Picture 1 (cartoon, rainbow, N blue to C red):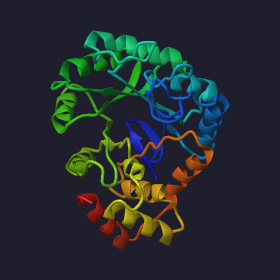
Picture 2 (cartoon, rainbow, N blue to C red; picture 1 turned 90 degrees about the vertical axis):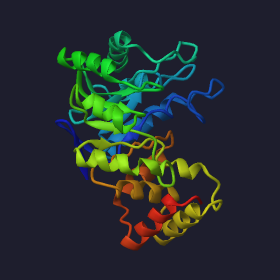
Picture 3 (tube, one colour; picture 1 turned 120 degrees about the horizontal axis):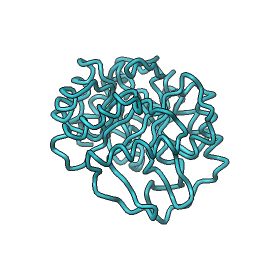
Picture 4 (cartoon, helix red, strand yellow; picture 1 turned 135 degrees about the horizontal axis):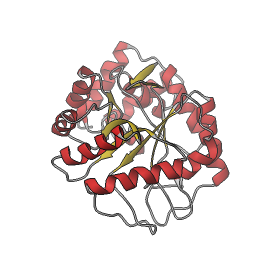
Length: 290
């Protein structure tokens, strides 16, 4: 169960590093830093379980932990098949305050920061994450120059709309789109997911488990997920991941966790086969208002 990001083959269940630096909510200045040993154990276990797609960013850090530094410490020297995907555009001060979206000229510095933290000569995939930017052309042109210079292998987009993809594709090849999406979460993304599939572009949901943050039983969607999970002796999170993967062969998931047990469950979700009837019921729940 693999997909290609350009010339790189990845297993469709990856690992998102956003939660590694801290317990609780990401980017919360009051969050407790995660135990360093546990974070390193989770990363190493992920690779042992076959994960070869790790999603990260230089702005994933807490007061005393950096996701990139943890990845470097845990996994370097890196396995030949490991694909590390990072994102640039946003930035934070050392104190954790958010900075304005980077200008095109500032992107090289962000790429170099990721290279330094990860200890890499080049970055496998860099996603331009945007916020409030209507035209990505100038930013993507700068990323294409960094690609031509050998600092970046492949390019992608994060938090974008279909017209952003059109703009970027006029500049350079786009190998992935990373947007917020999951069961019952942003169903308006369904069409965009389909467009990516038609163009051979990976669609990589973040927050694919967003619905699991709701209280169990508070919506029809949760009731359906819970019932199907019981039928398979699986967790609701596994059902959500399995449904997301069933949306298309180009759909990748990058659930993040700091818990080794949850990590194993997430990876095992790739083995969960939902019946046609179960998928139909989940699809209906996805589109309902709950």
